[in-house]
Length: 543
Image 1 (tube, rainbow, N blue to C red):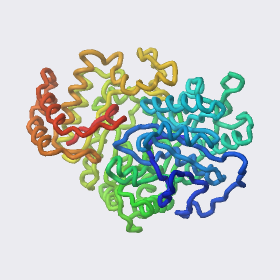
Image 2 (tube, rainbow, N blue to C red):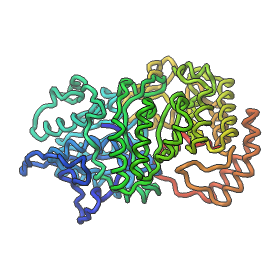
Image 3 (tube, rainbow, N blue to C red):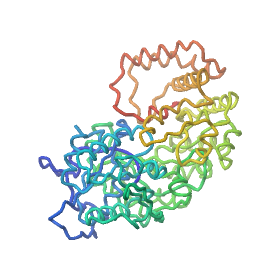
Image 4 (cartoon, one colour):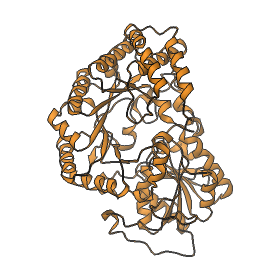
C-alpha cells in the first residue's frame, strides 16, 4: 500500500442511501472498469474490507491514492470496500469500529509522522473490540520499517512495497482461514514470532490496475480544502540517489512510466468524470523522459480538455527543455513545476549526493519556466549535515537573487529531517539522531527533528527566524494558500523592506517585524486544521 490524502461519507457519487457506503464492485464509470470480473460471492461469511486513512493535511485533502490502488483488485474479486478518512469523516473512530463489525479485517495506509497517532488509536481499539480480526498496515512507513511496525502488539500483518496484489492475497487467506505463509511482500505473526516472506517483485506501473477513483467523494474534499483536485501517478521512482530521499528504500531507483497515450486518456477521463480543477501528478521526477513529456502535452492539447496540473522534477531536467517545449506544456495546462533546489552551496549539494545538479540549472529552470508562463517552485533544505553558517548564507543569497530576478517564483523552506530508508539515515547514530525504538515513537519524530543535534539552541532559533523573514520578504501569495486580507497585506507590505534588508545582511536579532506580523495574523487567523503536516514540514517563500 502507498500514501497520502483524504475521504468522507458517501464514497460512490450518486449513492445516497441512509447509512451504507459499501461498494461491492467497481462502478463502470470508465473504460478502465469495463472488463472487470467478479469472484463468486460467499454469502455465509463477510466479504468486506475496511480501509482507514489517518489525517495528514486537511488543507490539501483529496482521495488517498494508495488505498484507491489496492482497492481495485479487491473490488474486481467481489469484495466490498469501505473507506474511512479521519479528516472528513465525522466520528471516524466510532465509524471505523462499526464498519469492522461485519468485515474481514481493517487495513491502514500511512507515512512517517503524525499519521501514526490515529493509526495507533484505531488499531488498538480494533484489536480490543475484535481480537480475531487482523489489523494490516501498509504504506511508506511499514515498507521502510517492517520489523518495527509488525512488532507492535496491535499489528497483525504488514505489507512491504507495492500492495495491489499482496492485499488481495491477504484478504483471500483471511477469508479462507489460512496462513499468510508464502504471500510475497508480507510480514505476519505466527505463534508469537515475526515472520517475513520473500519480497514481492516490483511491477512496472503499466502492469498495475487502474485506481478506484469512483470510491472518492470529491464534493467532500472540496468542502474541506476549497478546491476540487486529485492526485495521479504517471511514473514510479527516480534515477537519482539524493542522500535525504526515501525512494530507493521502496522502488530502488527503477524509473518506469506509462505511455503518453494512456496518461492523456486517464487524466482527461478523471477531469471529465469528477469535474476536477487540478491534478497533482505525484511522480518523483516527471521529466525523466523528454519525448514522453512532450507527447503527453501534445495529446492533452489535442483533446481540448482544460485543467491545471502540476509536477515534480529536478532542475537539471527542467533546464534541458526549450522555452517552446515548456510553452507547449503550459498550453496543455501545466501551471507549476516543483523542484528540489535544496541548497545554494556546492559543498552541501555534494554532501546531498546531488552532483548531477549544478547551481546554474536553478536559474536556467526559473528563467525558462517564467518565459513559458509556468510557476517555478523550489524546495530549500536548511540544516543538512555539514552545512555551516557560510553555506546557509549561500542558500539565502540564492533565494533572494532568484526572487528578485523572477517575481513569480516560489520557495519552500525546510529544516532537514532524516527519514528511515534514506541513505543519510544509515549514519543516524553517528550523527547523534535518536531513532525511535517503537512504532508509536515516530508520531512526533516529524516535527521534533526540526531541532537537530547539530542545529539546536541559538542556532536553531536563528534559522527559524531566518525562515520567517524569508516568508515575508516578498509580498505575494503562493498557489493554494488562503489570500491575505487587507490588514495582512498592509502589514506584510510594510515589513517586506526591512525583512529583505535583514536577509541580505544576516541580521536576525530583535525581530520586531515578526512580532508585528504575528499580531496582524492573530487578528484574522482562520481556525487551524486538526493536522496540517505542511505547516510542520515546509512553508513558502513567495517572490
